[in-house]
View 1 (cartoon, rainbow, N blue to C red):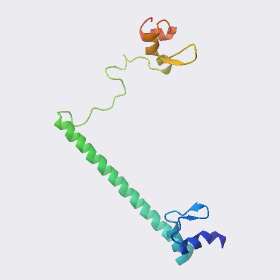
View 2: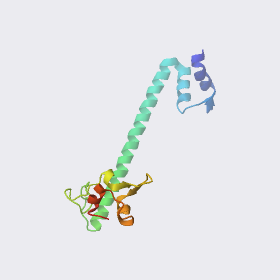
View 3: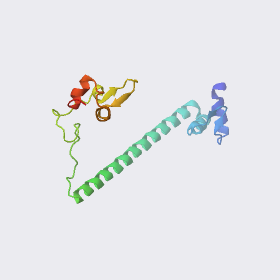
View 4: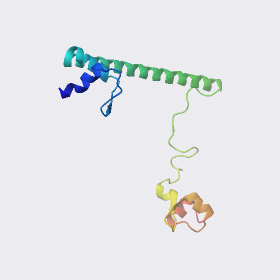
Length: 147
């Protein structure tokens, strides 16, 4: 009896939003009504129908998102062509602008920051320009000379 207590109450009082200390979920009343009509088999069938409806809704949402994305890409292409630019942007490059792979500086975390005597860290360009003579020996080579 206690296992079906919640189903019995929800099938009779369909307007409840909370029962005991838990909220009544969207499909819970629907499943309880099916259980009251035909038992566990009807409830199982209703759960299958609800799952199919949810999957169909998700497919429709995904299709709508794809449509919006494709429309936006087409607008961008048209705008680029109107401005005299190539239809597609150039492929993404991981190198910084204007630098070749061979000419790129060492950007490892140890080279970008310098530890101060108080334990804090300063960006390398700040220490090189605002606090001359504060650079450690390995950072001096990374900045191109003394400071």
